[in-house]
Length: 104
Image (cartoon, rainbow, N blue to C red; front, side, top):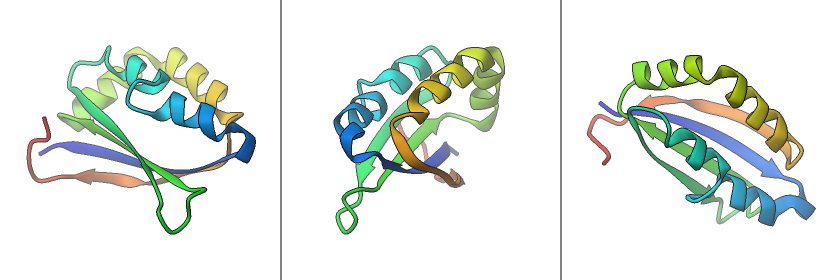
């Protein structure tokens, strides 16, 4: 089972391009997560019906891998989260899911 973390974001209009760079496949978060054992990939999705809204999907091999990474990198995780807060109006945890299959 693959562990999937989903977040919904509404970036500030003037920060949309910077938000896409930070959360996209070559962005700050992906670079950071790549340090983690068990990290698979991140997808940034833009809502077709509400183009001001985005969803991120972070794929990990297991919950244990994600928790270990977050525990080991707590300070940097929190710093990056605070740094990126300035780009958004809203950030909501959608949920944590198991995909039922390997996503490599």
